[in-house]
Image 1 (cartoon, rainbow, N blue to C red):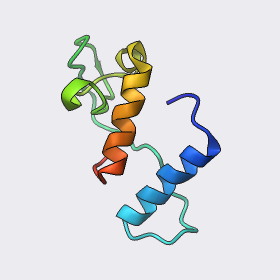
Image 2: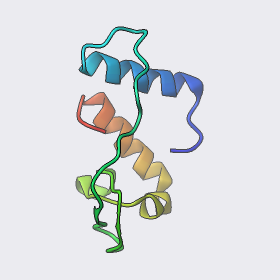
Image 3: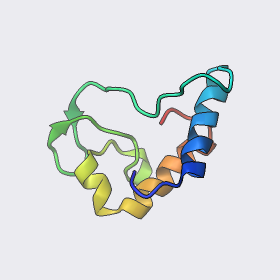
Image 4: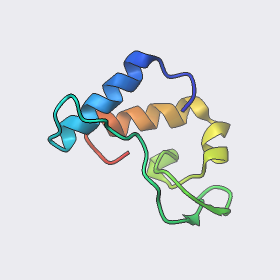
Amino acid sequence: MSGLTQGEIDRIKDKIRAKHGLDSNHPAMLTEALTAQQCDQCGKIGELRPYGPSGSLICWPCGQLDAQGTEARFFERLDEGRDI
C-alpha cells in the first residue's frame, strides 16, 4: 500500500496488536511471508493477498491496477478483524 499516513499505519498496527492480545509497546508486523500461489487475475505464481474483488487472491501488480479498490478491501478486512 502506498501513500498511507503515519496515522493510518498506527491504526493498522493497533488493530493487529488488539487482535493478538499484544500490549501497545509490541512491534506489530504489517506483513508476513506467504506460500507462493497462482494469482486469480493474471495467473502468475507469487505471494498473494486477499484484496481482489470478492476476496480473490491477487499479486502486487494486479492489486496496483485498482489501487484504490485494493486499499479499500484491505481496510475493510482490517476493520472486520479478519487476517490481512
